[in-house]
Image (tube, rainbow, N blue to C red; front, top):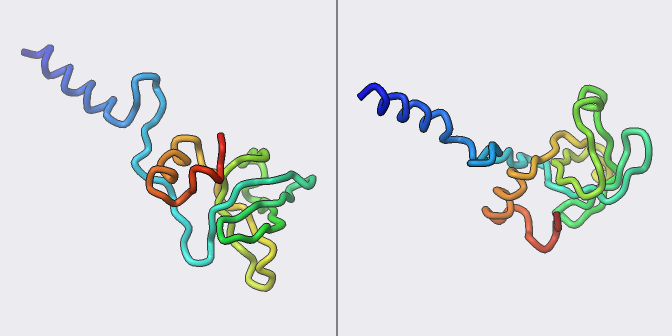
Length: 118
């Protein structure tokens, strides 16, 4: 009987992980207010890049100093962009989505499947 108890405990611990050890995401952070989802087109040097946003605009975005060393970004990455208050053609990258979060966004319809090919 104690063996069955241990199996139940281990099953509860592994509930949020797949067989290969990858985390299963039931949710991803969604944009609020004026924030939007975008895909990095091109790095421009330093902490600046061109991001093709889902609202139809291509913005010149930067990574704020507090996130500069935490976010490692490449062309093709899916990010969340917060447009500037004064100039809507520029913005800040505030979040990089992980691959399992991207799959969740595609499944729920927030990210078009044809738009981002990974």
